[in-house]
Length: 231
Image 1 (cartoon, rainbow, N blue to C red):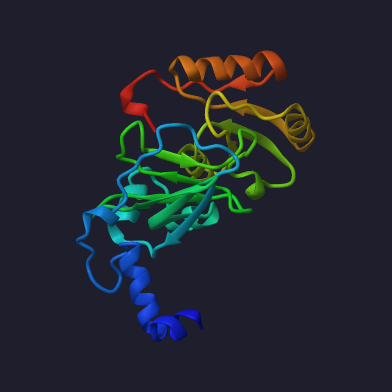
Image 2 (cartoon, rainbow, N blue to C red; image 1 turned 120 degrees about the horizontal axis):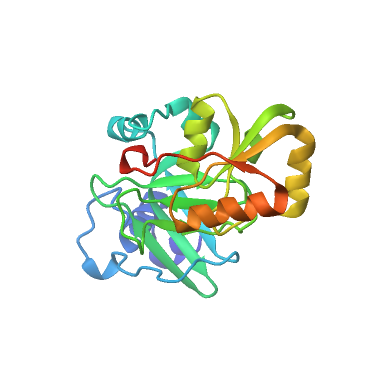
């Protein structure tokens, strides 16, 4: 190989140098602050953004977190949710690396075709979410029954998982300002007898519910307006 000829490095040496250059910390801890990721993306990630990830096995404290919402490991795996310890974001000619901090919760929602949503449950408003999905990407669509009595449209993956645990067919929007296309709704109307919406009780959630009700005559499920029923 090129590095063998030029540097006389064997394969393990190449892996070691990659580990150190990217500050991955697999071979030995990386203490070079100049190599550690410090940049946060403060603008929405666009559709042309590429994301590479490194998945990790589930740890007990992570499963305990999801179990607090009555979401099982089986459901997490059904919806392609997994813990990760680092990821790269590539935008045009620039790329950025982000590494999970010690004891941090960092999760990947995978939608296929290299479309990802990355979730830090305890992150700040700026770094809680990263995504290269489109506004038309519906979470959970591939897991629906072909025909059914009820379909619930919600606004997040966590809600989607809970609805699945309760036995409902459900899909979730990318957010309460993202709406399904007319063609998608019409296809759902042919497959399900009744379609409901389940959104938050804040202004954005109410606007989303009203929009879907006015445009497609969907009934909304209203949750109690209390922090006790959050998530």
